[in-house]
Length: 293
Image 1 (cartoon, rainbow, N blue to C red):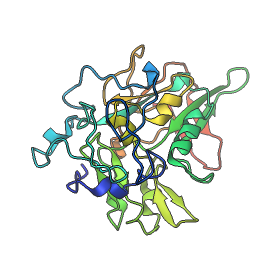
Image 2: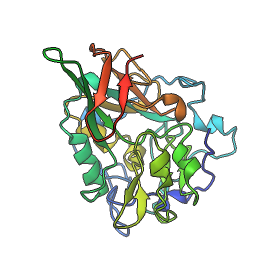
Image 3: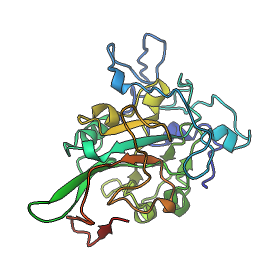
Image 4: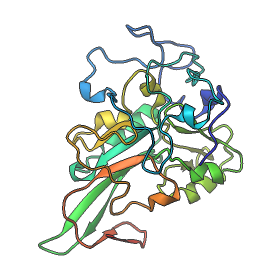
């Protein structure tokens, strides 16, 4: 398991100051007084977090309450200092491990999640914190294709953190987010090599790595990440780990095309109930085949 962060002001430069909230020096105050993120006047219900029941441990036997996991070594209600803002969010579950939920059967490959993520983080065209790909198999007339939307899974045991020589990564007790400091990064790219999910993105122009930050500014005010809110097919969801979204019946830790979850214990759960061929292949340049167990 990764060490949890003990530096409260780390996130001042943890990669969450690039389009995630109001620019430094300018606060946007909501009706509830928060300056962390400007919530729309008529926010849609599907964009709001709604975790009612929370399990004690996750699929791998680890505590979901991350303050309990640290055995009281860290205080509650620590600010994340998003854009140097000391305000603490209103999310009652901010110290619980959060996770993405992906329903593969619903994904239509529209890339709306990619676009929303890149717009929010002001990413250049050659950087994508979330990517949509697919695996395919079978033969005519029984050809099948399954889309997969993937970003950082904010793992219980993140190998990006282990592989970073400058300690630019930190696993936080706030939401269980794995955040990265691009100013500490010197662009060696080790994290991009070891991450099974291709989450860290090395910018060849800046010579620095950046990645998904779980939209912690949105979580602080009770909103789901931008990619989830933009999903047209209701394929992406988000909440406290092991909470199965409404109208879902599965919570797998893996689907065809997904790396072995035992490597990092990723915080993502899946539903995939449609029948697929025994062998599903990636169609990109990677000579890799995936087999159904």
